[in-house]
Length: 223
Image (cartoon, rainbow, N blue to C red; front, side, top):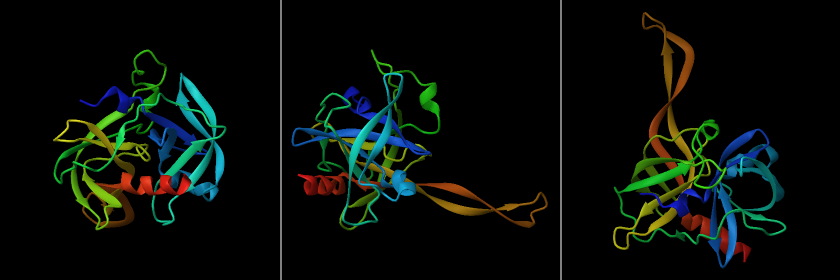
């Protein structure tokens, strides 16, 4: 079962007109927030800004510094509060791919659509509990900067964490950041089967994930 430490690390976030998911990690005794880079595309990827984090029953404004990967195609960003403050307890969830196995079950956590308004809150808190969905680890890129899951991603999960249970140690570890899902354009037909000029975007079940190794490389640039 997913640990409370994982559940309590995940938050719904808002920036401008975009909403998504984010999670906290600890690195060298400091807490950082991790989310998807594309949430900041409309603002042309600022170096600092105010984001809104849903916790304690309301959206709270938090000023952050933003750190991106040197590869502009990496869809992950690390945020540091300024002035520095923690937004969740220091859980020290392990951030590693050690022990992950191709074909194993993994889990991704976040806030799809607007379900945050109706899901139960975390125990003893007014912060909504993230959705938990399961997928299968399907493949890695050559340098393990990105990997792929077989599952159904939904809008709102972007920036949420992906975790797995190490089969040797039984420890849950954070493996990556949800980015997007692959879709196919399917033509819309009339009742008699004739083609139209319209298409729908069909979810293929292939989920793109930014590896936690890439997040660690961003953190190494900060400190």
